[in-house]
Amino acid sequence: MAGNWKMYKTPAETTAFFERFRPLVERSEHCEVVICPPFTGLAAAVQAAAGTRIRIGAQNLFWAREGAYTGEVSAPMIRAAGCSHVIIGHSERRQYFGETDESVLKKTVSALEAGLTPIVCVGERLEEREAGKTEAVLAGQFRGGIAGLGPQQFAAIVMAYEPVWAIGTGKTATPEIAADAHRAIRGEVRAKFGAGAAAAVRILYGGSVKPDNVKNLMAQPEIDGVLVGGASLDPASFATIVNF
Ligand code: PGA
Image 1: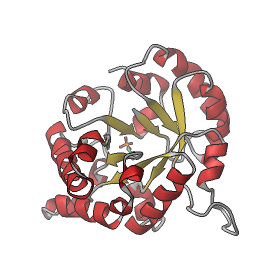
Image 2: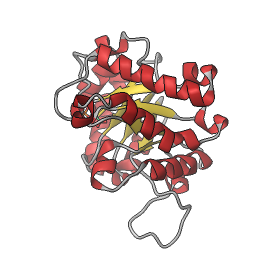
Image 3: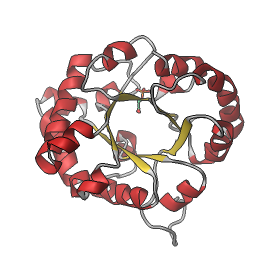
């Protein structure tokens, strides 16, 4: 159960979130919990989550280890900050910051080399779904990106299916639509990495997940977890999702 805070919360707001969130998930041993604040909130989050099962992740990285790349942050730096995860290829990064399937692959490799677990996002836009191209788009994003990983590398990643039309819109995919897409992604994984990898890979669903729809989404065997934006900003609401 992963929370993507996007560009929300100062370090002080991060600390305040954890003070309320920690007791609410203290007994939640049934799943992994990851929260991904902005870079400036990572230190506060790592400190506030110390001694708990809550893991902290970043929302992006640059693939070089270090160098003259003004404004960028590398995988080893994120690891050294106490993070265990990083989101890669979120649709907002694809849309506004020029992320491509190729850069997603490079970033994923550098995250793995630094010992981070990448949460790699794929998903179709509304016009692509309406044109009946959903499966082709998902296949294209997979084949042009993380299909380039080695089998051992692939075994260490988490995937997330996030239909762009469902992100921040309140329009969640129905559990059946989400499960169909997850099956299509698993089909790609099977073709490239085999049946074992397809069965083992965890695929999160993301896009307007809320306390009142998480149960039906998670009832689909294809859906292994959720990646939550807006509803992860409030401690009570994200705790309800974690503990559904
Ligand atoms: P949302 O965002 O839950 O606010 O729709 C999901 C995401 O972009 O990861």
